[in-house]
Amino acid sequence: MFCPKCGAAIEDDAKFCPNCGASIEAQASQEAVAPAPQETVTPAPQPQTGFNPAGAQPQQGFNPNTVQPQQGFNPNAVQPQPGFNPNGAQPQPGFNPNGAQPQQGFNPNAAQPQQGFNPNAAQPQQGFNPNGAQPGFNPAGQPMQAAPKSNFDFKKLLKNKFFIGGLCAALAVIVLLIVLAVMPKKVDLNKYVTIKTEGYSGAGKATAKFDKKKFEADFDGKIKLTKRGKAYFTSEYGATYQALVNSSVSDPYVLMIEDYISGSLNKDSALTNGDTIKYKWDVDKTKIEKLFKVKVKCSTVEHKVSGLKKVKTKDIKKDLNIKFEGEDGEGYAYFDSDKEYGIYFSLSKSKNLKNGDEITVSLDKDKIPQFIEKFKFLPKETEFKVTVSGLTKYIAKLSDITDDMMTALQKQTQDEITADFSYSDGTLQNLTYAGCYLLTGKDSDYEDNYLYVVYSATMTPNDASIPAVTIYLPVRYTDVQTDGEKLVNLDSGYVSGYSSYDDGSHWYTSKGYFDGAEMYKEIVTEHVDDYNYEVSDGLTQFGA
Image (cartoon, rainbow, N blue to C red; front, side):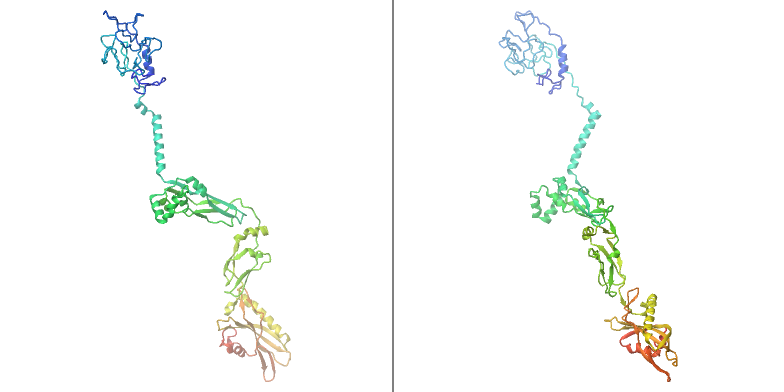
């Protein structure tokens, strides 16, 4: 169908003309109530315009003076011509009886159409338009009413809050898409780290994994280089960089950024249920963001250990039986266990030890699973410390002998004297500690010494005619050492010296010395070239 206002072709069910905006429904309503056209009577001898011999009403478009049929005329009346309206109420816009397309401005009485020509009246009727191009044509001579204005009001639309809200939302989405397209891609590394634990509680192991496959899938085609990044990789790697970019790898930049991502666990073994371990990143975020169009986010990942198998524990420190032997400064340590525990443990230091050193005893981490499998338990302490003790050292001065050591030494010395004089020809009374002599070698290559523990006593011969006499009994010990708690290597003690007693009337011999000065001479004076010496209080009266 055609627009009744401007004649433009429109859809049959259109409500508005897409060309002029006229309301089709409003126009049709006005046409339905328009007044019927008036009959025209002219006294001239010529037939009246629009004469119809078949009836009182003239046929619309009939012209007896021309060869050309009037608009809408069909002499055969079989099929109506395009645009023909038998009711004559409204001519079809642009009607052309000679063709399918209407001729603009057709006038049957003249070569050129006269503006406003109306074949049914001397004066053109208001609104007449013989060309059919302009809106408002009415062949019945009645003026056409103007089409109603469109109901579309743009200003009113701008005041509609829903419209404005929707428009703003659409603009916001567009701006957001633009911003997202140019802003750096956010990369949250924590999303790609998984921490797993396994094994026995107390001997659990942990592993951390960065999921490269998921990372590459998430950022495939989304990571780009900055200008600085392109310049850097071109400069540093040259052909290698170009080969990677030109390779068949789906996104080489994802692989490149992975080279800058790493991390590690602060503890990955000897774990117990309830422990908290941490995965710490080793990532230079500043450098990555300079080379790639990304914004890196990462933080320490904490993981609470759980799910490890439970195992019984047992204290086996004593069963390990760690021993220290040797001289102080040159000592050594070892396990003296008959339960094979020692082969699973290690010592942080086992040689050149001295008293007071602290060493660490630990169950080898790699051997924990085997230990549990063999013994069906786990040591209560898989790592502990012990202090070195018991290593011997030569007595270098009398002050190295503690009071407790001296007490034990005196008792042993008394036992030695008693044993030696059990077969003597006399008896000893008033056995009293007198003091000590200590001789140490001057040659630094030899740490030998001699310790003399001297007792005095009253000797009464079995022969009652011989008077009792005072005797000094030095017991000599060779290479005396201490382990820090006691004196050792004292099994070589014996009463030193052999002298005779002669008062002019009585003469006899015995172990020891009847003269203190003679004792000092033989023990000290005769050895000063090779030994340093020290004399304790109580013996200085014989020489110091």
